[in-house]
Image (cartoon, rainbow, N blue to C red; front, side, top):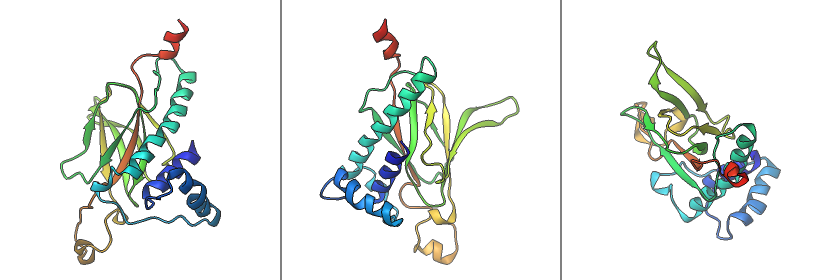
Length: 206
């Protein structure tokens, strides 16, 4: 799962390969791993979220989600099944109006397909405790990008973006002048595996 997710993140930043994703993985990505040099392109614009190349990459995340749901089904009941392809993407941009609120009606898994350098994605409970604080569920910071987040259906959560100086597009007038800048395009793109509401494994056994 770690190998596949690392490959897919590298592919998301790569120039589309005419020979296809499988050949790119066997040739270009294998060469990057062997030499220890992984090339990246400029930080993409939001218009580049959906391209034939990247849509194929999102589809391949189903392999990771399938293994993740299978693992959780062995760990506990009521997780629900996963029927690939069953995925979506959640682009997260600069948030001048505050964190993004989301709630899913099925169990889901989340993992970064892309995080800008220096950026962090935090997930909080939308509900405050008696002390007026929100519980933090997790943080993606570029160092734990192979972790999967599992979220139970019906939980209302907030996604908060924290941007470091590396996350702002280099070369803009705002950066050169030392003023605050808002990044163009997404700060992060989360791949989402969408589970089903029932426990199909138990239904089949019954």
